[in-house]
Every structure is written in C-alpha cells, then in structure tokens.
Length: 117
Length: 110
Image 1 (cartoon, rainbow over the protein chains, first blue to last red):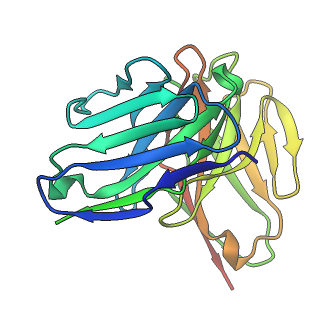
Image 2 (image 1 turned 180 degrees about the vertical axis):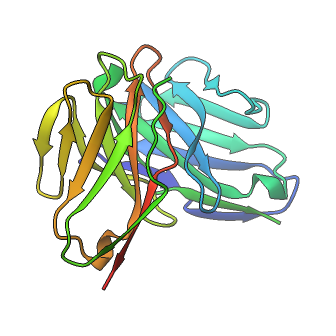
C-alpha cells in the first residue's frame, strides 16, 4: 500500500518553544491531508484538514494560531505547534488521502509523540 | 455527519472468529466504509474497505447489509497479535472529512 511518513517520531521540548512535525506521502500525491491528535486510551480527534495550496480548515475548538498547518506541495504537509505547553503533549498523526470523496482511502503516518516539559 | 458507533471492547481467544459491528445510521449515498487497526503508539493501518454486500481480502471480511446502516468486520482465527483497537470510518462525501468513532478494543487471550 501507499506510504505516509512522519518526522520526527518523538520529540521532547521545553514549554514555550515551537515544534514542527512533517508529514510526507512518499509514493503518491495527496491534495488533501489530515492532522489528528490522540490522547492516551482515546480515539483520534480530527484537528484540521490541509489542502495543497490553500489554507487549512480547522475543526471547532482547535486554535489555528496555535497549530499552524502548511501544505505547500502535493507530498508534504507540516504541523507546527507554537509556544507549546504541557497540555499540548499528545500523539499527533497525519494522514493523506488518495482519491477523493467517499471512495478515497486514507493512509496514515506512524505518528509523532510530543512531550512538552 | 456520518457518526459511527462501535462496542468499546471485546474479548476473544486465539483461533476464534471475531465479529465487530459498527453502526452508521446516516451514511451518505456515496460513502464507503473502511476499517482500520491501530496498535499503541502507531498510526492506524488499513484493513478493508467496502460499499455494499461482502468484501473479503487476505486478512478479513466485511459484511454490509442492504440498508448500509451498519457493517461487520470479521476476523477469522484471531491470534494474540490481533490485539488492537479497530475503527470503522465512513467518509463524509461532501466535505471530504473522516471522523473516528470510539473504536473497539479487541483483547485476544491465549
């Protein structure tokens, strides 16, 4: 199947710093990518939808100035957690959509675990 | 939104067949149903996708009734390594979004 790669897989940072997570579709072009966050023993929560060449669409309750998303090319989307605080510690997962509409298939990255001290 | 509902958890023993049902009462006409498996600290992994009736691949079968308001993932002869959380996902056709439900934590015992 298609491959989506996330980097870094783990990151530890100090409170107040910014962290960037990259999501790449390695063998297909993805017009649309999604960012999720997952707290321990909970389901994945959709944060935002990232469309190549346009602004991301954020879900209700997700601060767009806190979680900056850039989708500058058809194979790369980045999530920057700005001025991170301990409550931002979570597992962040990206996915890329191959195809579209109801028939599209999502391919997920390996996830990035962020720990803010 | 095409909200999904699944049992929170299920227990099984090695070698048994496991059926996990997901309800999605307001699925849209063009939505497909996809099931994913997730191990701790990993991204979800695709298992199977279908639109109606029955789909089978090398790891699972997916049964979808005519009204498409539910679907059942069938895992034949589970092993300990099948212990994971299983999610059914229904695409929101018009807005091209995918929301996860609570998932089903399958615990396979020896």
